[in-house]
Length: 402
Image (cartoon, rainbow, N blue to C red; front, side, top):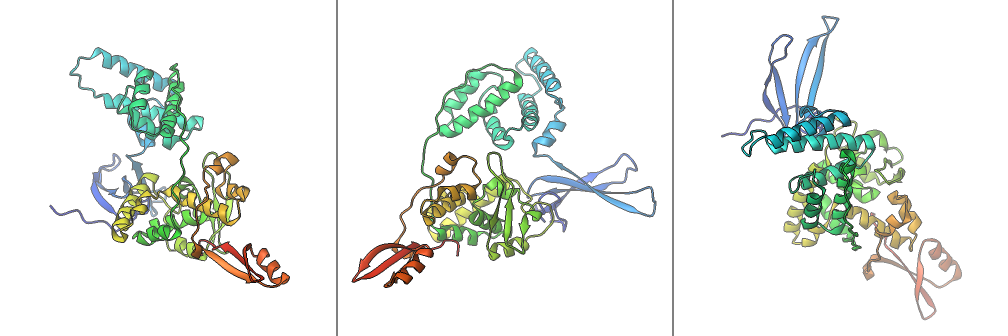
C-alpha cells in the first residue's frame, strides 16, 4: 500500500511540512465538507474553514487546531470537571460506578486514570508546579500502581529501576497529587546521589552538530553549546529574544533560574536566521520530539565515527561542558559560572562544575624575557608555569568555542 502524499502546507504548531490529509469535516452551518489534515511531526490535527463575514465580499480564513496528544486537549475531551471540586466529584462518581460493576465491566480503567491525570495537569498549572516532569512521572506510576492508594504507589516507586534522584522527583510528583486529592500519606525518604557529569571534548559536541541533518536540530544544539542554556529555556526562545545586530540572545528562565542576556557568535545568528519564521517561537516543537530526534542523531554519529562516547551526550551535557570549561578557563570564577547558568543558588552551580585534565595541545604557550612582556601576558590571562635559562614560560587554556 502506497504512503499518502504529503501536502504543501505548514503545520501551524511546529512549522513542519510533513502534513497529510486526514478525512473530511462537515460543519453544521452549511454542511459543505472541509478537508482535515494531520502533522506527522508533532501530531497536530487541523482544518481550514472559510465563511463570509459581515461584509459578504470579504472572505476570512480560520485554522482550527487541536493537539490530541496534549494534556490540555485531554482535559476537555474526557469530561472531567475543570474545577478541582467538580473534578474530584466526577472522579468519585466514576470510582463508585467502577466498584459496583462486575469483573467484566465494559468501562476501561484507563478512562478513570486519564481523567485523574487531566485533573492533575490542570491543578499543577493552577498551583504553579513544574508540570511536564511531574506529569511524566505520574504517567509512569499510573501504569504500575493505583494512584488512589499511597502504599501501592510507594511500592511502585521502590521497585522501579530509577536512580534515587528520579525516585525523589517521583515522590514530589505524587505528593502534589496527594495534596490535590486530600490524601494523607508518609513520604518515603530518598537521597539524591552525587555523581560527576560526563564531560565530552568540544570536537565531540561539534561532531553531533555536524551530524544533524535537520537545520532545526543543528541550530538547537549550537544554541545549547554557546548559551549553556537549560533545554527548556532553549525551547522557549522567541524571535524577539534574538538581537541579531549585536549578537545577543535573551534567555527567559525556567523555574529556579534567573533571566540573562548572553553574547553569541555570528555563526549561531546566521543559523537562527536560516530557520523559517512560522511561529513566535524559534523551535516550535516539544521536548519529547527533540529528544527522540537527538537519539537518532547520536546513534548515526556514533556508528559512523565509531565513537560510543557520543551516546553518553544529552542536551544537559552541553550545559555541563560549558560550565566546566568556563570554570577552568576563568581559574575557578564560580560566580561567573553561576551568572552564565542563571542559577539563584551557588550550591546548584557547584554540581555543574568539575575540573578536567587538559592535554598539552589545549594550551596557548608564550614566553617572556622582560617585565613588560610578562605584564602583557598576565593581562591576557597567561600564568607562569616554568622558567628555562632565565626565559619565563607562560600558558593558558585555549579558548573554547572559537
